[in-house]
Length: 344
View 1 (tube, rainbow, N blue to C red):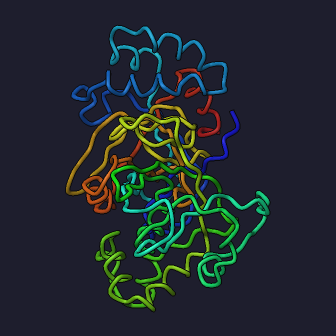
View 2: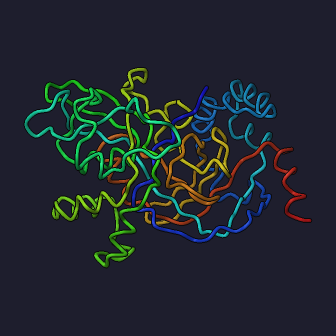
View 3: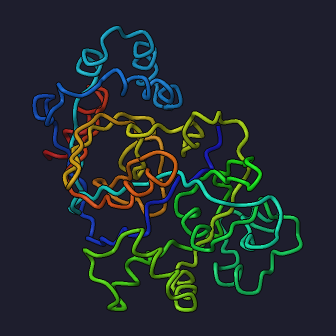
């Protein structure tokens, strides 16, 4: 299928900028993976089989076929895969993302004054379009029938765009689900980084909730802060995903809470299994699947963990800014093919 979905972007608290070196590849054993034996390998296998058929390299075809009938998930991964640590000189950074559940309405009125726009028909893919400020300040898209729904809070709209998907709950109890429909062609800029550069907060203080509170408590300066990020995301209504499934990721498949991650596809192919060793206040050692990406996810040791839907998931995701390491599981022959590049 055509993959035009950039995925749920990392939280705007992504503020590292270490220079990337030429990548290195280190082969590991499963004994080198912390707590490997303690994981729920079957849960990871179930998620892997949902998207492994989309991997384009022929070497994956046979592996995917076996995966769908494997009686022992752990034995399957150990028999067909080789752990590979890919590094590019930048330290590991894990962040979290989620699917927001927001108050909205199908039409403008009362408190619902902030539109969720679908992709304009004069938008040209790959070319710069109107900036965030131009879209929100003069409302040049108003009256063109592009409004999907209306939100009560401009900060909610901004973070919906950061996440890339969400559920909109209407006052009558109904609602819709929206997913990524395109972007305006301008680079993403971290407003968390901007708050630090302005001397308002120190790096360790910045989180999604801190950003929300500051913008709401400083409406004029907060609006200007959001406009620093010229990137603007457009949406589409998503009707094909059951309510009990996660939002669509970059592979146009539902992603899974605690088992799907967003990665940089320049280093990690979408659909492949990845062993995660996240440090911090809530350590996590778990086999996940790379099923999403985002404009703020760059580098070999950079990942965004999907924490689910709603406010509770958002609070968990907003606290994640942790080190550790992630290790790709590659088909054995593919892994060893990397060795000449690292030893010459």
